[in-house]
Length: 407
Image (tube, rainbow, N blue to C red; front, side, top):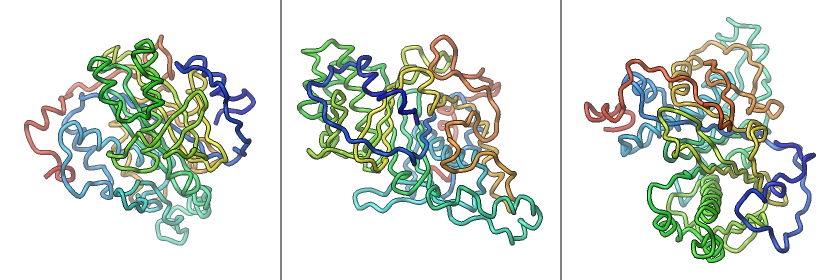
């Protein structure tokens, strides 16, 4: 978390956001932030340049509990779903936690199928046969920090649009970890501004419609306001695990006052972070499709709701990391290494609140130079190398999808 010694980041950053200052800002009570679970966001550049073998390997590495009961995923939707399922597994792999120690679970919900999260099942048994073969490691894992009650849940959320996928995750108590969501909106419109606004008005309240009206505001200002509001709403809805048809007009976002209401009641206990992601220069992404407005929603249990605006590179480096799809694909073969009976090697990183997950600079121990986050003058992506690459859309024309995804 950013230090409070620098003041309120939201108040300091309001001038850079296209909203007028509040006339009468509400009084906010102080709250303790000592036990804040760390939050990490991965921004992944998506593209179609994968080989047939890579597609098969990724699809077969998806955890069985993530496979949909109905095989309705096809084409690009199937490929993006596969990647979103692999990312939580990569987080646990980065923590060097064996597969038998955690499991995918879902919250109970009447309105939807539930929100997925990861729960620790049981600590490693030092008396097991595998532990006897690695006694030193077994002694180290008898009471791992990651199995304490306050940090035995990992919540995550993913959203994708255009050439980018956002994946946010945090760990801690169940109510703090599970209620996490991320929203991402492309700043590049494929339709006219008027058509886009008309398609999104049903998600806004009357006050929000006035604040983004094209009749009273410049087009760029109105568009920026709309993307901020929509990304916040999307992140909050995903944090609750609500279905796609949720009525977004029940939520009202008032950035100048730094408040959000649901059904007319002020929302308390949540933290919202906003930032603009730049994918950089890549042959897979056009320059106009490299800008994205992102937002995260995370329940903290405070007596107020906060908005944090991250605009500088240092602020983004605290919790935002950029990856290319090729890095994800290369890390997939290592996901199954801890599914056997051997104990994992000792790790300096554990799933605990003492170690910030934002310190990760690689995925699945496949080392890559840490890309310069939010740097316009440098490419955020590593050199792409796939000599036998095959557009996966061609793969669907030549044969069916793997059995685990499609019939």
